[in-house]
Structure formats: structure tokens, C-alpha cells
Image 1 (spheres, rainbow, N blue to C red):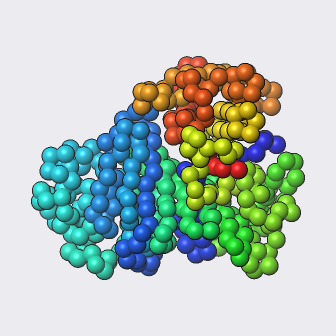
Image 2 (cartoon, rainbow, N blue to C red):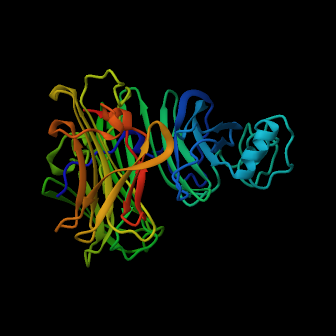
Image 3 (cartoon, one colour):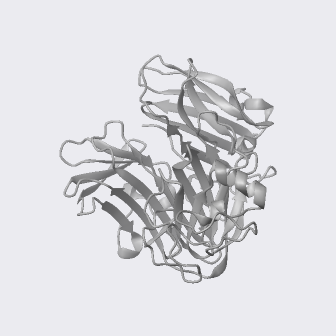
Length: 443
């Protein structure tokens, strides 16, 4: 059993009752007015160069808003409407046109629009969605969604169930103009909700299966929900939650006609959380797997995400609170296993700071180099160390100031590393895993 896996605010998605903050709408009926929700985040471009993070266009068809990422990939839409929102990636052509005419048609008009630009910066169809059929968006013909339920492998995605006062943060990884992975977090008042995508196991016999782990912490309830989708209808699967060598069997479920199953534990309905815990926060970092109930073929794996806070997760440079985070890295085509990056900040232990990269299920003896973005030179990565896979197929690089190690680039706090790109490569410079250093979550 690996140590605690903690996922950051930037690596989470909300999941409240029937609402899904990041998840394909596919005809969702939620509509909302202008509220005080805010939306921002960061884009990581996965085109093989780990660069060009600035100047990436993102548009919101419903409002016509367009933003361009900063050199570090960050962006903000500011105040956004409530309800359902679609975020759409711009193309290179759109970027050029926008620069030429001032945020004109290309990023707004989507597909099937009726003109090629008006030079005003106002969308000619009111910011409507794909295959527009009218010129007014006060009542959207597609209920404000993008018309499909694809969040990855597409150039747009939906945010569903945004409510007044929500703060939504996105982490988007893109490759070749489409979304490769998508995570987000929402915080609001005393509610704490989070979600993380599960990873298809290397042993899975189902190439289409996908899954999610969701948690919800409210004053009146605690909730853990595990979902698997795109299974073969009628397939019987089981889910397990394990931590520190103790495992809980959540029981069997049969995929419905749409290939979906779920395990929904809600204390408000009298359910008991697994492993004897009373809050979902205590499950953060626990391993989750979904497997075939018959032959035990593992289909999906993941970890229960950390429950986000409404305050600055990193605590700022002057924070005296303990912080930690852990996030899975994206596996490159042809690679196997899993990899993670982890941060730990302990001001109460003489300002102990720790950066760790870990790789699992690898060939014994494999040497893996860890590359990290230079905070002073956006988009440029430098090798900061190496790890050798041991007899159990695991390897790690740990830089712990409590043990005399220095942090990369001479920084004195792991907070300075948050948001930087990280890659695990072979000694032949082949990228195996990639991602972003996660934001700290206050203990």
C-alpha cells in the first residue's frame, strides 16, 4: 500500500447531488441568470513541447466572453452566469483572427455560424452553441450546453450546476487542439465538494470505460459517490476502497442499459462511510478500484480526492498552516502504470518542505528522470533528479528539507512550485507522464 494520496484544489471537480460541475451536459436543462460565480484556472498544453502556454484562447459561447491565457497558462473569466456553461478552446486560426479584429467571430461563432466576422468583438449569434438555429441567446436552444456529453477528446466541455457565489477553478490539459484531461474544483460557503476522474487500468479489457470519484461534505451530510460508465450493459462489477492495508468492499453493481453503475453512500440517507470514518475528509488519499465481479479484472483505479477549502489553499507565502497535496500525472501513449507528484509543507516542524515524485508498476531497474518547469523561464523544463525502479516496481524522488535536501531552483517553500509543469522521462528523453504541481490544501 502506498502512502496517503492527496489531490489538490486544482485537481478536483464538484459533485453535488444531481449536479455535476464538470461533466458533459448532453442536453442539460439547467438555465440560470447572471450571478456572482467566478471561473478561472490554468491550461497545460500537451503538444510534446511543454511550452506555448500563453496566448491560448478560451471562449464562453453563452456570454460571448473570450480570454487568453497568460504565459504560465493561467486565465480568468471573472464573474460568470449561474446554471450551465460551455467553455470552448480557440484554434490557431481563431487566435490570428482575434488579434486582427479584436476578439471577433472565430472563437465565438462555433460551428454552423452564418458569417465570417464583423469586427465588433460581439458574437453575431449571441454567443450561442454548436449548430446554431437562431440569432437570440436569451433562451438558448441547446440549454446552454455544447450539445454532447464529451469532456475529453473534444474542443469544448460543459460546467453544469453553477450556483450563486460559487468559485470554480479549472485545470485543463490539451493536446492537438482538444481536451486531454479536465479537472476542476468548486467551493461555496460551508459546502465542500470534489471529484476526480478515475484512470483506466492497464489490465482493463474495456477500452471505453470511464469513472469518477465524488465527495460531498455539508453540515447535514457526508457523501461518497463512485461511478463507472461506458461498460457493457449487464456487466457485473465491484468497487473497493482501501487505505493503510485495510480494504472495504462496497458490493456488486450491474451496468444498466447505458453501461453505467454507481455506488452512492450518503449519511443523510442512513448510509455509513467505508473504513469506519465519519467524514469524507478522512478518506482523502484512499485507493479506489472497480473490477469485474467474476474474474477480478481491474477496470478503473483512482484515489479519493481531498475536500477543498474556501480559503487560499496554499495559505500564501506567509502562511503558518500545514499544507499538503498529491495529484496523479497523465500517462503518455504507450506508457504503463501510474505516477504522482506530492507536496508537503510543515511550518510547525521548522518549516519542513518536501517535494516528491513517484512512479508505480514499472520495470525493475528502469531509470526515470524528473523534469520540472523553471519558475523564472515559463515553458522551459530542467531535470531536477532521477529515480530507479525497485524490486516492487516502484520508484520515487524525494526532496525533503528536513533531511538536508534543497528544493528545486533554490526556492525555500514548495508553494513556489505550485502550478509548474512536471514530466517523468526515460533517460532517452521519452515522456512517460506529465502534469502540473498541485496546489497545497490546508491540513
